[in-house]
Structure formats: C-alpha cells, structure tokens
Length: 480
Image (tube, rainbow, N blue to C red; front, side, top):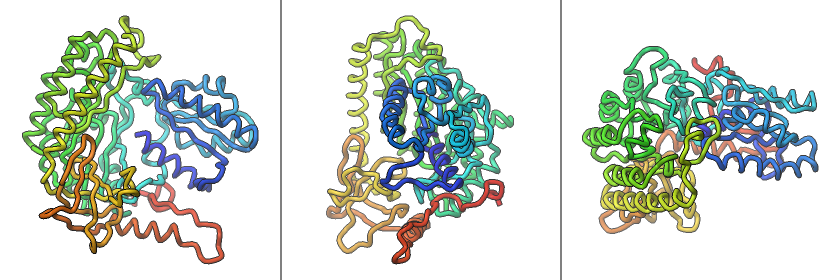
C-alpha cells in the first residue's frame, strides 16, 4: 500500500511540473512513512537530521513528510524538526503539490492532516515503477481492531471502491501494457461491506478473469476470520488468479490470538490452508508472524512453532513485537524482555527457513512459467542471470541458452527448475531442461518506454520527462 501511495505522490509531483532528480541534488525530498514498526520513527528523525545540514546549505530545499507516521505524529514532527516544510497525512496525499506551494509562499511549515479520505488514492495520477505490473486499491482502512495494530487509527474505517471503477482502472492498466495486477486492501476479504455485498470479493476475482490480456492477478492481504470458500473457488476457477496466497497468522496460540483480537483460532486457520491446497495443490502460502506479544509464554510460542510446522509456508515474514503507542497492546502488562523475544525469534527463523527450503526443493524438476522482472536479483549483473517470478510468486534466477533471444521485462519464459535455495530457485540450462520465450504486450511496453526515455535528439541535452504510468490526462477523464 505504501509503495502504491509513493507512485501516486510521484505522479502528482510530475503532474505539477516537477521532475525526478537524476543523481543530482533534489529541490524537494518527500518521505512517505509507515508507523507499523517502531524503527520507522528513529529512521525518519535520523534522516531529517542529515537533511538539516543540506537545508542550511540550500535554504530553497523543501522537505515533506507524509504517510502513517505523519498522521500519528502531526505536531511532533515540526517540533522535533522545525526545518520540515510540509506534513500531510494518509487521507490527503492529493494536496502535496498545493502544500509545497503554500509553504514556499508563506515561508512557514504547512501541516494538513485530514481525519477522513479526501479522494480515493486511485483517482490520483500515478507514475508507475513498472511497465508490466500494477497495484490497484480496492479498499482503504480497516474495520478490525487487532490490538497490536496502528492501521485502523491512521487509515480509518474501511472504504470500498465500486467494482466498476476498479475494473475500469485495471482495464486502463492492461491497455497500457500491464500483464499482472495486485489488488490491495488492508483486509480484502471484507470488500463489499460498505455496499452490502458479502460475495463481492469473489465476484471481483472472477471479473478479472474476463479481462483480455490480463495474465496474472494477485491480492493482499486477506484476514483468516473472513476468508470464505467462495473466494477459494473463485481463485481455483479463474485462469489468471495465481496459486499464491498471503495469509497472516500472527500467532499459533489461541490464547494469544484472543489477546490480539484476531477473531479466528489456529484450527480454523489450518483448515483454510487445507481447503486452499485441496483446490490448488501447488499453492504457495506466505504469512506474517509476531513473536513476543505481551504475555506470550513458552507454551504459547511452541503453539506458533507447531502451526508453522504444519502450515508449510513458502515464505514467512517474522517480526519481533514492537510496542506502538496508541494501540491497546502497548498498555498490556507482561511486556517481554528483549532477550527472550530475540531467542524465540531466532528459533522461529530457523524453522521457517528450513521449511521454505524443503518446500523449494520440491520444485526441482518442475517446469514453470516465469514473468521476467527488471532487476529483481541483486547479483544478476555478475552472474549473467535474469530473474523473475513464477506463477506461485517464487523468485527464479535463470540462464538464457546461447543463441536464444533475450527476454524483456514483462515477457514470459517457460523453464525447468534445476536447484533450490531457501528463498530462490535456479533454472540453469541442463540436459533435458526446457526453455522457451513468449514475448508479451508488457515486453512491447518496456521497449516503448526504453525508446521514449532515450529519445533525446543529438545536441539536445535536456532529457524530456517521460511518464510510464497512465496517459497524462486529468483524473476526471481517465475512466473513458
């Protein structure tokens, strides 16, 4: 969601005539912050401290802070860092250009935080980071009250977008060359609560199956309490909905789940995974887990270990509980000492790494279709490999056989997996391995974008600014 908001902020600034700074000193620095974890605060104030020096050298430099931390710390930010020019919240990212203008004109910090959503984020212009993949918000905010989570107080109650608007946005992305979309919501399962249709999310997935040229559909995040069988059926029966599911567990202990106000228990959770795998045997399931929630005992922790062992996650994002002021859990007695939490965290990490590796080893010998990414792998340059994601979202590094054409980001390759590591797969050209390339509309869009970004006539040193996102038109016309 934060990545998506950042793409909107870039789009808004480009619309207002700004250009991204290419390795030069920027005139404007925007921080889009998260407040879910404690270290977000420390990082922000550390970065603002560094920028203070820059601001003394260049008084025209403007610094803006937005997002969840801004929503939470509105007054504190300007107190702690009086050299900040603009503070804006999660509900009004659309006002950033105007606030920068006002700060310049009035020569003082502008703080504008709205309590409710001004305009749905997807109605704002976007500068997308990728030619082949797009994010589409289906809802913002959340009606759950998990005791560890700051989101409901910073992003407000759930607001749903109408299905027609969502599908029109997906269609516009597909027309622009996108082949993969990810539907975003703090809790996608409850989509439809606002307009009274319990089956709305499953219907939306099926409707994505009707969009010609859309090859891959993913979504995040669902909540186990509201995850219904109609969604599993829609996933299994819709050709372009991928066999991949991110299903946050948080804890395997029923007692702790109750304390967290997560309205499901471990048995229900495991039952959902069984039903998902019965419908999609090769589904890859990822999760989020919190270690060291207040009052967690060794028994509680061992319950988490048991559920993790049974769940066979392809990936588990593990977090040490961090106390967020303003959440009910922060007030609970029995906050655990750091060393206990650290020790449990390391045991859990060892287990999730072992399982991820075992699950990846089962992929060896399978033939998979990989959507080629632009530089997903950190070492690709040195190894001459290319990387991408398989249908179940596993990261695959592969070689292109000698004499074969190079795939472009957004193209699809079919390859045989030859080796596995805990968090990636390898497909090297071995005897009997398959390799074929399918060029896609997304690859063509990549070519167009490359051509456009290099289109500088000789002697003209000012590069033209290029938007890779939606066509540059005002939002009110964007739905035609």
